[in-house]
Image (cartoon, rainbow, N blue to C red; front, side, top):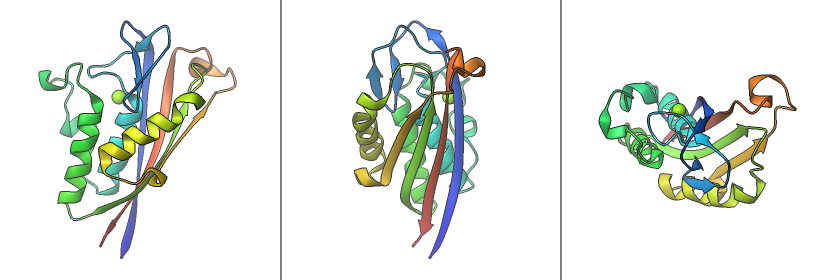
Length: 159
Ligand code: MG
């Protein structure tokens, strides 16, 4: 049994006049994230981690931001589709681990719901989905609150 890992990264700026959505969960905050879809950077980073683990390319190849189908789209749909593509390529999903770097809002109260949405979207048990929030200690653009960054790792295996 060969285990493979994939790394996903995403960043979006704040400033969009729509709800802040992370891992499919609407979070109370003065501004949402910019982007062609719903700006859900957690869904995007996990999507890229899964596609990367299977060496299937990236989110831009599978869900181009020039495609009107994905305009304001629910990014969990992209994540579900990516999970299906990885499974169709012959892999089982093992786990994902995510770090969200943002000064605000505080993510701790939302982590259980975020984990549940990602787990349900990918058909994984809740204990196979980890999401953590961190600040950037006030440093650089993330520290100023211009936007947020997400790092994700996914493990898959070929049974
Ligand atoms: Mg993105």
